[in-house]
Length: 328
Image (cartoon, rainbow, N blue to C red; front, side, top):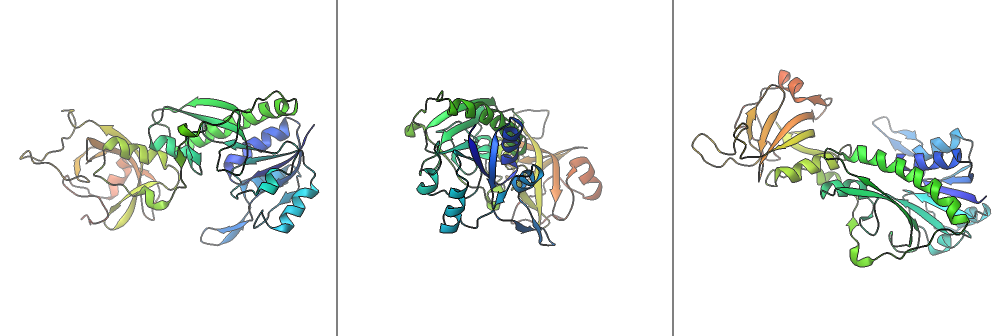
């Protein structure tokens, strides 16, 4: 059986590590990012992968920079046959990539060559894709450009969030890596070159991406809300405070049973305007169609339903949401 060094850091990398351990694979060491201070108390927290490794008594190595000489020396000491990588968070040098007999293989949360990069889980939702999946690939110096060894496809539900899809792909990755390793050792996997003409890129998420532009179509904003749930989240402003939007539905503007995007004199309503308020929702005008809000979170408060929010805050039809507005 192969000696494996596992490299990973966040929650996404925990399930594959546990799956390999439970399948009986020999994990010689776990390499993860250094512990960091988090929260208001600045308490030092271990990475999720480190917590998992310690639970199973596996040695942990936490280099600040994996490319430095001391880190390279340490990796060589493990005499591993294979490095398995899942969201490690540092770029590996060619020296590291070529170190093990079987090289380095990566668990990537998309159907490569589509959505190479740091945030494929969220971007497939933002772009309205119907399917995604997990790819086991042989790593090379390019960004997610290595040969494909194995793929697993999953459907994206209409109300899928970044968080729910993360969990699905994490479990899919765990199943796929356990399937892949015995085949790799027996030489049963046929590496397949990626077609670069079909590639796309999923850049790293930023908090600024979450600011809602009400001039966009309601369908695009609704995907933003789902895709950025749970981080960095989609938000607007209410009374000068950040207002996160957690759940919403698209309401066609031509649906006469719902609020229209015109005022009483048939004038167009400015995007970001609250058009109608119900007992458990309110509708906001967008560049096209309306967005019906069901769940939100005001700065400094807990996430609540709109029904509960309206018990403490008085909204009026015609009020405006957005960065440059203050509601009364």
